Length: 139
Image (cartoon, rainbow, N blue to C red; front, top):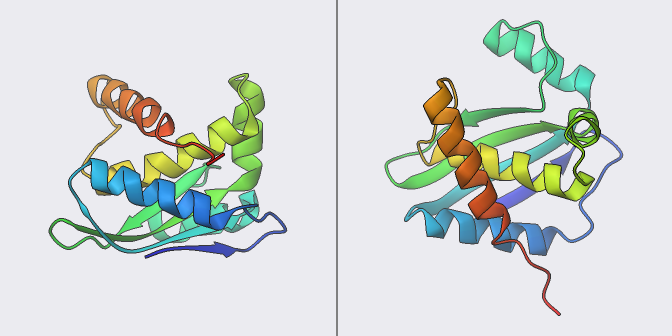
């Protein structure tokens, strides 16, 4: 089950649309959907988590805690809405495109994709693009 929680004023307009998309992303990687929580917050909230749990005193757009068991994905994905907004401007993409990229990124980590090396990062970007293409609004 995909759930959405908010520690800021931001809220997704259509949680079901996003939930269905993330479910499809998981299925496309031959994984099972467990309990995945997205927590939307601001920079300050995520910085505290980054410092407390990862000992990093830097701003970031996403931190994911992976509790997956075998092929069933479980975890908490914290997303700074402020960082996503800044990154959208920096990379000259729409807010929605950057939000989808970050949301897919968290789940892709649970699927086993990494982004520490240049080769891993390149594959992660390809996978993000592929998964973003799966997002569509029903007409």
